Amino acid sequence: MNSKLHIVVRVDLDHARAKVIAKGHITVHSVNALYVVAKRANSLKEGLDLELDISQAFVDEAALEMLRTASETRHLPTRIDPLQAPCTISVLAPRRKVPAAATRLAA
Image 1: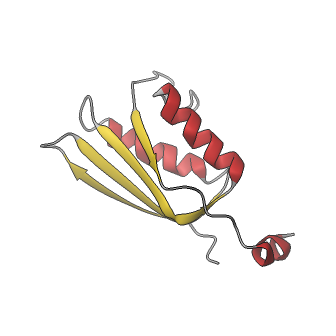
Image 2: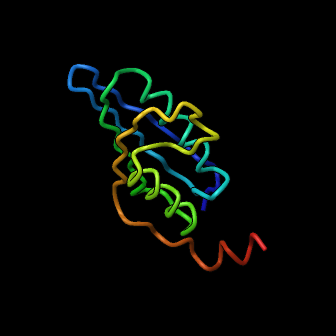
């Protein structure tokens, strides 16, 4: 498994949509990179609908909970966005568990 996080952003300003596609391993530390990208995309246009596609990523449970919280509150964490601009995030696809072998290798 590749532990690097790869992020691609697709933006459609005419329809006020952006899609952030993440591949790799999303941890409680690397989720901050997704937040920063989401903040930058969100700043492009007011009322932007932001989809976060993690269907091809391995997501730690704690990181997934953090993403769900941002989706439910419609705000990014204060440390990422101190002004707390509204941010409509939809998290796509359920989490895929990290293979046990990869967890043992990391320890």
